[in-house]
Image 1 (cartoon, rainbow, N blue to C red):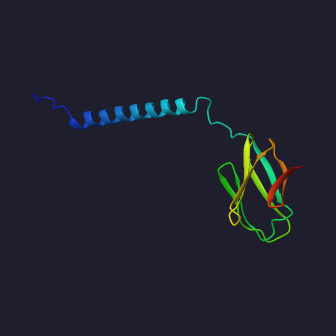
Image 2: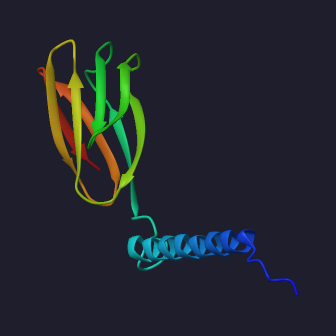
Length: 129
């Protein structure tokens, strides 16, 4: 009578299957922990139109909204319009003029809109319309 010899491959395959189930369970638990309400929808976005009106022609200019650089070049036209789409909420517009070594900052209104920037007597002014 032959003795039954245990198959080492069968034990290895069962171990691999057990590890795969454990890894899958960890991934599912991590996913549920990070996204408790499913995939989160993006926050509403506000659209702004920044119009560079009087006094900027020929100036080197940088426009930054929060920490993002949205415009960086020399203004060649009398008026220039820059469209910016940022998350709705508290936003800060910074106007940097590197050649004059000046920076101006303005709080942007919530919900988007048209912002007109004018340069008078070396100072930048913002009008909301």
